[in-house]
Image (cartoon, rainbow, N blue to C red; front, side):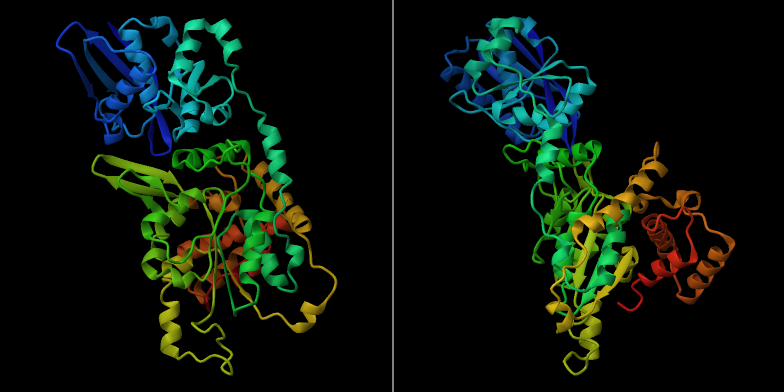
Length: 511
């Protein structure tokens, strides 16, 4: 007997609908699997056979052939085990074809028949919804993640025996046996907002750096903070998440898909509700930063999507690792090529970096700085001109005076600064309604003139800055986008000269 079972496959962070075709015939006993299968999928043959035996089902002496289509896409992972087992039971007439109607099956099988969790449930569920599938049977440990997608009945099962019991009951009675999983997505966002994070009120002084942080957060601009050791660069960077606009539901699903295929969604947290903040050590490898591997997985860049990637002591990451950032900062994605195809991961990040002005950290104070000119140039040379050119805002954190440290009154709190950011964010939401943009930093060059128009006086000012400061075309456009954000923070519809002047001051000409 021949049957088809619907399954889900992962390619990058997107999913595709796979058909597990099973044919059982009266012939020389055997078990063959085809369909451009990875090693994990080929091994499913033994897992399924033993799991069926230990669940009380002895396969009859028949020739069983399993094909997973489409045959031109490589199948990886262990999520095909459960649909293969169900397909075999239908093909040997232990189950009726009726149980397969409009149902997606996902899950890995243990040798004892246990249904184990798998990666990538969220993109599979989003794909299933697009395809009009009404029910999904998946591992119990993945059921909350699957229930994030509304409009599909999610049934979480813990074993093959439990799955078969559910399918044999008939849909009405089966829902009494295993209740469909449901979650309240809004309540998860509220719970996340209540978590305590570091506050800008802890920072004494550094008003200019706080101002730059507000502008960077409001427009999602890349930020570089330079300064002597102990000036508060890291403290400020770690508090920027407290003033970022919250994730929208659309952004949350984008980020959650990446964490889902990486297997990084935590128990009790079926999807990401706050912007990521990743802080890798400077010994990180290029592959871990950008992603890759034999079976490609997202790297730190993609895991920071729609959030902050904080690189402390930037030059210590080494020039080769820093150059990995070039293409993602420009294109907002990472492309990984393998001999069987190319995979693209999103990487729309806000880069926040901190660095000292020299190896000892005290330049240009020659009373304390012991570095030679060649040492300083070599240190700064680890960051190339094209990388500097891609950073929108460069600001210096000067050493804090004792008088500022001894002040009892607190500085502006994160709540106050976030109010400025949210006002600018609401302006951007209204401006970019119906467009592909979320923040000013997202603007493509073709739309700069439309959204960052200047008056005659402002055009003359930027013309003089372009030539006197020898700006590149990229730096010119990034300056305009920063000026647009400054105007939004100041609640000005037009970009004025003072906004442009401040944006120009944030260019890292002397970094």
